[in-house]
Length: 211
Image (cartoon, rainbow, N blue to C red; front, side, top):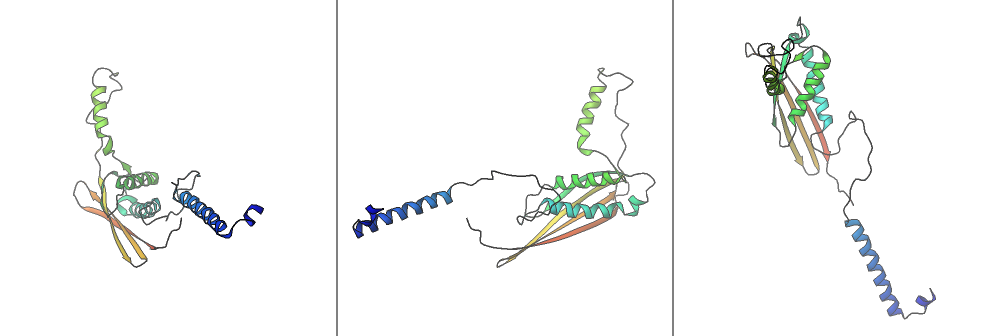
């Protein structure tokens, strides 16, 4: 300490500047260093997720819940003597985002199955089933237990649909609108016997994000 007090003022100022520059450089390097998420914890999937303006699991849960409630209360399902056989097919993605539409339709199928009001034909398993038929009829399986073509049940209805979006941005304000439309078509007549849609809109405000 006494060394600095007895130092020439010009030299003292130079030393202080060097120290200040070194401290500033250290802070700059620290703030520019790569950052990573190093600690996490489990969170409830049902908890609302609006961390960013993209399609989220909360959006999926909201629209699927509405569609399933509408479908199971339709007379074609609610008043059926036996649970109709349904096949879930494609959901078109007409948004500007990359959205896993198969994930949405999987949730629709799961929630409808939980209702016990419909049963499902597994379109995705057809190739596996055909290969298993071939194996069971190759002579490797006991004849009393083997399965083969001709015993499957045909679907009564097909469920498909489309996901649309519209994005509007003015200044710092941004809104994202989504609309999920589902249809259920009678396979025998090709007539849409049920259709419904669920709309959601999310509003965001652009803010500066500091380091």
